[in-house]
Amino acid sequence: MLHSFAGINGHSFTDKSSYLDQLRWYALGDYDLWNMWDNLSRYRFAGGTKSLIEKMHADGDFETRLGTVISKVHQGGDKVTVTTNRGEKIEARSVVVAVPLNCIHDIEFSPSISKIKLDASRRGHTGSGTKVYAQVEGKNPVFMGHGKESMPLCFAWTEYNDARSQVVCGFGLSPSLLDVNDDDEVQAAFNQYMPRLRISESVSYDWNQDPYSKGTWCMYPPGMLTSSLAELQRPEGKIFFAGADIANGWRGFIDGAIESGARTATQIDEYLSVGASE
Image 1 (spheres, helix red, strand yellow):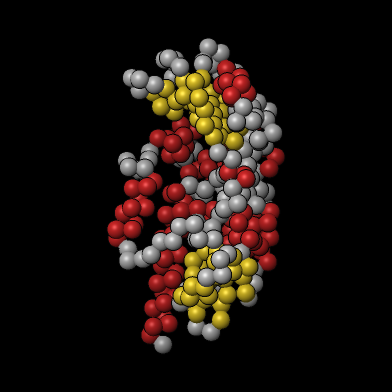
Image 2 (spheres, helix red, strand yellow; image 1 turned 180 degrees about the vertical axis):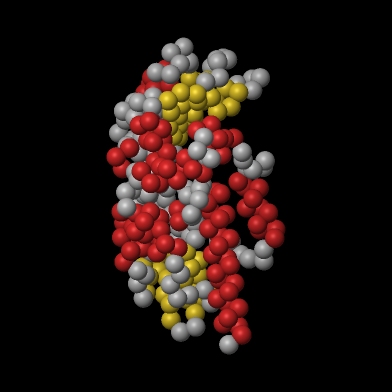
């Protein structure tokens, strides 16, 4: 049970994640397992994450460029120059780097950012497992279950249950344990929890293969919390760092992204205000 619990927190085998970081998750749930699950999955934005983004757009006067990959960030003089993979150059007084931890080292910084940041990015966080949703035929009991970390899905539950349909969700600790694109394997994995469950269709996405995430949510491996977190948060010149992967609290979650963004926004405001007064 404990291995399954720790495995789903780190979304990887339990020997990969930090014991201290596991305790942080538990502390954020008021040292109560059910409070922790409520914090993780019960409370959400009423209109989904998209509603928050839309409100941010409505509140701010800024331009958004989708599908724009950043390859280089250069500090020189009184400006920062950001170069896209198409060769386009964008200049600014300061820059916020808010990419996932596992992708920081893919950007070429000049002058280089600190070795601690780059080493932490190359080492990466633990999130590397699987997640699958499945539409269920008929009506079945609502359930939640833990399994062994060696099972294809070490955690599974009823995600949606309404008058017309049911959707179940499951997490596994490694793509090596479950091919989420194989209907028979997905069916067998859920049947380890609910033998009579019949699935009509399923859907998943391999975040490990996505070049702009290179993994799922963030939990740190042993030693990274104490050796790297403070440095990952530290600005370097005109470059500031933010994102859920370097939050103090709910790291890897939108709550952590909000926390980190608010802190970094304050840093930038102070930096630009001092520059304006000089």
